[in-house]
Length: 116
Length: 114
Image 1 (tube, one colour):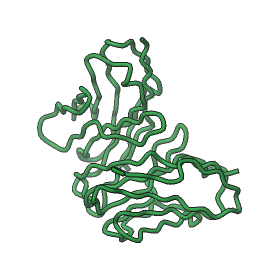
Image 2: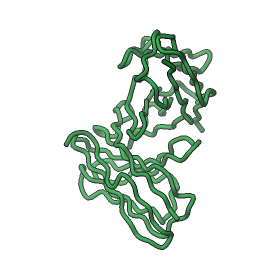
Image 3: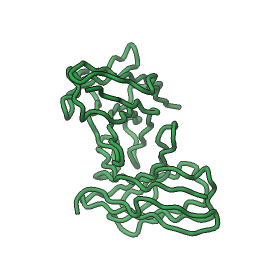
Image 4: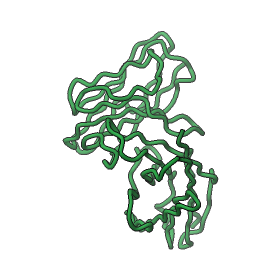
């Protein structure tokens, strides 16, 4: 069965500092990979996704993620964090080429706190 | 309204009550989803509807009963719930349920079962 691990439950960074959120997955083949963000009282918003091709993916709000097959990782990065980035971040995977719905499996999330 | 809306935003119910959660999407999508988000646990996919047909039931107890009367509306009927069912219930929609589709989420209904 596929699984997603986000090893950091909480991360605190200073505004303007760089950020890296870790995500590792377990799956027989290369799954489709996603990062979502959830602000308090809000639903999840897609930041970026990887299906194939260039392993460095650009997303919204200045985020990027790099797929590393050898490490089964899809880490999220941002060069300079803004206070408004404080939220919970979820990594998710979906099996490729399945019909009948997009069956996302989520990690447990990383809560990001930004210090001013 | 735009996007995915959910009502009510908060719900408190006793174990013997019957209540329903409503989700509406204004995006012209054909697939809709229910997720459960419990504290310190990953989001769990509960149900998937594609063109009004249920295509996924992720071993959800029968006290949760989904209904999808059309592609824009999704309900979750609740009956005889347990305290461990207290969670944030999220609805999402996507274009057609394909694996490359982006899912758009509503803000959720915070459910508390007493």
